[in-house]
Amino acid sequence: MDARRTRLPEGFSWGTSTSAYQIEGGGDNTDWWRFERTPGTAAVELCGDACDSWHRYEEDLDLITRLGLDSFRLSIEWARIEPTRGNFSREAIEHYRDVLNACHSRQIKAVVTLHHFTLPLWVADAGGFENPETVAWIAQYARVVATELGALIDVACTINEPNIVALMGYLTAMFPPQVRSWERFVAVNRIMRDCHRAMREALRSVVPDLPVGLPLSMQEYEAQPGGEGLVESLRREMEDEYLQVVADDDYLGVQCYTKLIIGPDGLVERPEGELTEMGYLFWPQSVEYTVRRAAQFIDIPIIVTENGIGTNDDQQRIRYLEQALQGLRRTIDDGIDVRGYFQWSLLDNFEWSLGYAPKFGIVAVDRTTFARTPKASAQWFAEAARAFDVAR
Ligand code: BGC
Image 1: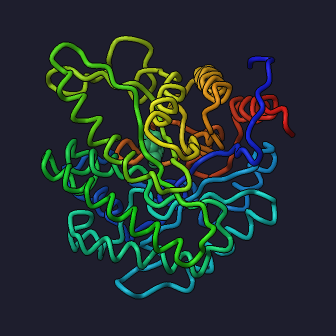
Image 2 (image 1 turned 180 degrees about the vertical axis):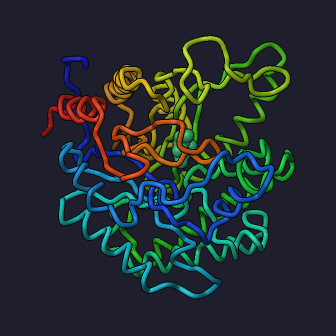
């Protein structure tokens, strides 16, 4: 790491990100669980018990503590909290209360996402994010979460990457409900923005000083000849329209992984250059690029709520993180108001349609025993975070 030090804003968060479905296991009341069991979908394997974090969350938090990180981003599963319409599960609420209390007893800041890709079956069956009624339903769920758990949440994220839910669910058909339609993709993005606004109001109406933001997937795009028009339309739908609605948020969550190359026929798969296991371009420059791009649109603080690499080669991960953090440092040195960095992900976990093959974790998880083993990158990241900051 660069030996030079950067003065970070007070309260800068260093953490790792996770999501409920990808680590908890047993998400059987969701559209994803059903998708994995539907013949002919893009899903290559079942999520099953995931990392069993529903039972092992204390172990996960102990890992965070041992690494000396101060924050943890987790999500709450709507399908568990409200398993059927209007019926809220006391057991699930108390479980998440225990998780959040376990964060606080370790002095770990809890950054909590209310929706991370999965829908309760009753919402999916009613049309999911294509049904305008979902706006009121998700706002009601947010109100219940705020009432029950708001005092234990340090930072709230409404919907994780709503633009990816729209893209993968309604344009590329990699996620449920596996649709390919530009019109439906645009319509879902519109409802997503309404959901975000409604959730923000719901959360604030219960806990006025709770910082609320939207974790948006942002990428660097490169157009090959003939791909310029598509890049423009994608940027507008995927980023710019969202960057308008977050102006009244408390922060923007930037989530970035790579650079997308777009040709006349769409995304260029396996482009030239160093590739990760996902077939993505190795592109740690994405942090600096997306943070700078976001800062041109908005006047609120930024938190990098996800960044990382899916690879079996932990040295490649360290190289990625090192270059990503160098880019982060340049944005802060230039005066951009960045308040945190969350590596994706703490654990090797369920990578949606691609199953368990991609390894995003700084901690390996044995698929039989669920034993957690920190990789060299975990130690590297912890030390890099410590060395970054002159203020502590
Ligand atoms: C998502 C995560 C996912 C990660 C790596 C992000 O788009 O929020 O759930 O695992 O990227 O693909």
